[in-house]
Length: 389
Length: 79
Image (tube, rainbow over all chains, first blue to last red; front, side):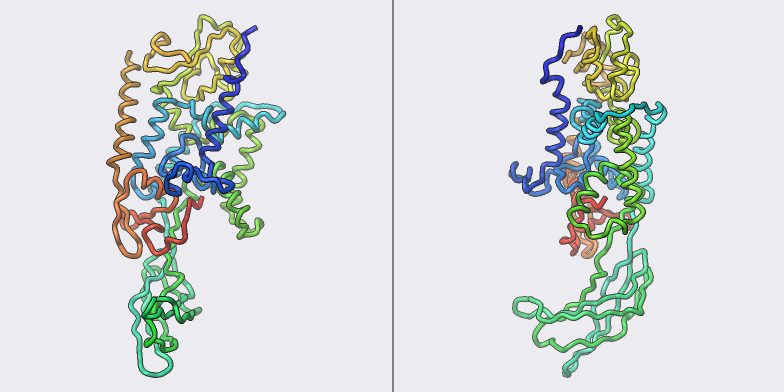
C-alpha cells in the first residue's frame, strides 16, 4: 500500500483554487480588494488574471487576458503586457495554473464529483481550443471586430433671437455613424449665466425624420421660449452618444460560458431590466452553451479545458518550455494504469504526462502505487537536473 | 541540454516582453467627441479594455467612454 499523503497536500489544489477564485472575485458584499490594498478602484483590472475568470463579473478584480486580447485584436493593437503576462505565467508554471488557480477549473472539478455515469471525450476535440484561440481571439476580431450604430452630431444652431416671447432655432445635424438614426430628439436648455445651472429644459421630437448614415440635414425650425437674457442656450441630443457596438458575437466572449455564468447571470439578477422570455437570440445561445457545459462537467472531467479554453491553449503551447513539469520513471512503472484512471484530462499518463494536455494536477502522482511520478521544477531537461517538488 | 537553453531563452524573452509591456508599451487613443489624444501604457490599456471600451475608426483607436462625454455610462465589459 502506498503511504497516505498528508491531508494538506491532498487538499492543496482545492485550497489554492478556492483562494484564487476569491482573489479574482473579491469585490463582493461591500468588500473591495482595491481598498484593502489602498489602490484606486478598478486599478487591479490592469493586471491579467492567470486563471480563466471574466472581468465582466461584477465582483471581478482582474482582467481576463483573453477578453483583452480579443478587444486588442479588434482595435488592431497588440496588448503586449497582457500577452506577456500569460506567457510569463506559462513559462514558469505551465498548465499548473489550470489545476491550481483557475476558478472555472474548480467549478469543473466540483461538478464532476456529482455521482453519474462518466465518459471521455474523443481525442480530436482537444484541438478545438487552438482553433477557437486563433479564430475567435485573434483572426475574426482583427478582421471584423467592431461595428458602429448611427449617432448625431449637432452643428452650431442658427438662432433667430428677436424680442418676442419665443425664439426660432434652425439646427443642422449630421449622422457620421454606420446606421440610420430615426426620430431625432433634441434637448434645448438654458444654463444660467451665473452658475451655469439649468434654468429651463424642453424636448423637441421629430418623428418623421430619419438621418441616413453620413447624411447631413437641417431639422424643421422649432420654437423655444426666449430666455437668452437669463442664460446660454444649450442644444444636445440623447442620440449624440456614440454607441460602440463591438461585434462581441464574433469574439470568444460571445460564447464564453465563464462570462455567461459569472458576468451575464449576476448582472441580470441584479438589474432584471428585461424579462427573461424577451432575451435576444444571442443570450439564449450563450445560456445554451453554458447549460451544455454544466451538464458535460458532471459527465466528463474538465470538458471546457479539453475542448474550449483559449487560455489553456496558450498555456499548453508554453508547456514544452515551462519550468514546471511532471515526469514519470518508466522503470518504476508496473503498468497498473491507476494513473490513467485518476487523470482528470483522460490522458495516457505514461506517454502524455508533462505534455500539452497535462494540467499537472498531480492526481496521477497520488494514484501511483510505486511513487514513480514526480513533479519537477527547473531548467534542466533530465530529471537529475530538476528539483523534485 | 538543448531544452535547457530553450527554456532559458523563453523565460528571458517573456521577462523582456513583460518589462516592455510594463514600461514601454504605448497606445495612442483618441476621444470621440473632442479628438483629444491620450497615450496609454500597457497596463492602462488593459484596464481600459476591461472597464471601458475601445473602437477603431479610420485606423485610429478611440476610447468610447473615458475620453468622451459619455463618461457616466461606464461599460465594464458588456459581454
